Amino acid sequence: MQTQLRYAGFPAFLSVGDHMGSMHLKVGVISPLVPRTCTIGTDTDPIVSKPLRTAGPDVISPNPLKNNTQSAVPPNLPQVPHAVR
Image (cartoon, rainbow, N blue to C red):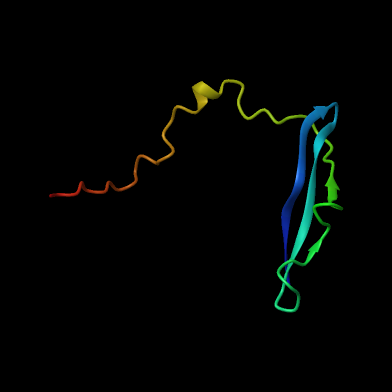
């Protein structure tokens, strides 16, 4: 058996303080023993997810334009030859 989170019809991304909005979800149950429509929660009676911020934002870089100008490919990587027509 597997489960899959599915959208159930209502997102609210308005953040107020530590409350980060809400989203209505349902959990699809995937198994040969149950019909494909089997879910925990429905569009009319969803699971309501209300995430809370528990830590401050992580600063990746104080100056992202300066730090992200390097190539992601290492310089010692072998070169691929050009195609010849």
